[in-house]
Each structure stands twice: as structure tokens, then as C-alpha cells.
Image (cartoon, rainbow, N blue to C red; front, side, top):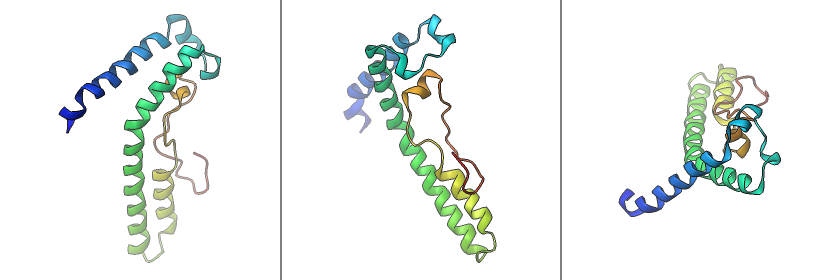
Length: 124
């Protein structure tokens, strides 16, 4: 299956790496210029890079969230509801966080959060 998509995948990877090379210059690296303050070409390249990263990141996050949901349910069922707080914390950690890569993650303006906060009802 990889042989069938090999040339296309190689092209996508090359575009992403070339985009990252042209987006960050030494002067911009220290300033951490946000996505909205960039030129249209840089925005386009960051968008392509974010989509390329999200294609790989989102399925991994979905598998992690599915596993956390199953684990949370098992903790709740096996404890007969006595460990509902622990089950909720497992569910919060696995399902919260970022589900896709934003261009600001690539510029360093935002931190990519794979896991969410363990606090019930808490933020990201």
C-alpha cells in the first residue's frame, strides 16, 4: 500500500519541509511572529504544513481518546461507580487538548497540547 502512495507521500513531505525552511528566517525565529502577521505566501506554507501535520496527528489523537474513553468506562464499571472521579479524570485527560495542528503551533505562538487537564470541568 505504501508503494502505491510512495511518490505522492514523498512529494507531500518535501513540500512540508521546503515550506518550513522558507517560513522561518533567523530574524523571525526570535520574534515568534504569529500566523496573522505573516505574508500571504508564508500563511499558505504554514497552512499546508499545518494540514500535513494534522493528517498524521489527528488519527493518533483519536486513537488515544478512544482508548481513554474505553479505560474510563472500564474504571467506572469495575468500581461500580465508586471511582467516578478517577474515571472522569481519565476521560478528561484523553479527550481534551488539541485535535488538530494550527499554524500558530508551527510558529511557536501556541503550545500543542496532546492531553487535556485532569481537573473535571477544567480547561484544555
